[in-house]
Amino acid sequence: MAEEVREEPKLEEKVLLIRRVSKKIPGGNYISFSALVVVGDKKGKIGIGLGRAQEVPPAIKKAISYARKHMITVPSYKNTLPHEILFEYKAAKILLKPAPEGTGLKVGSVARVLLNLAGIYNASGKIIGSRNQIVNTYAIMEALKRLKPRI
Image: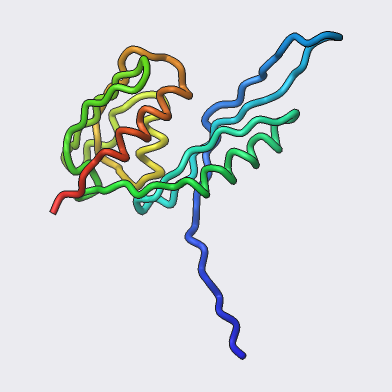
């Protein structure tokens, strides 16, 4: 009997943020860590995860596990975005625009990492209103979910 071998797509993982969270409880402080991780295959699939644990490595592991389970497909057109998108999520406003070949990623903060792992290499954009990296990451993911494929 020949065993069926399923090839796992090569996923790249990138830790965007590690936060030390301290909470007051009776008897002292409760300290935990939260990790924000992006997972992508550079072929249009991308996922983000937020993991919390008592120490950093388990938090990263939980975030990666969550990100792998909740991946989305991002449409692209000639290594760029299929169309322009202006999106509001909580306090963040996201503007992403397609760019011609050779432009590179002219976006700041977490947007560059997300688009790169999604396989989009030419785009420009702006994040307005929020400096919170977690909110910005979720805002960009929501904007990427709303992109429509171009034929």
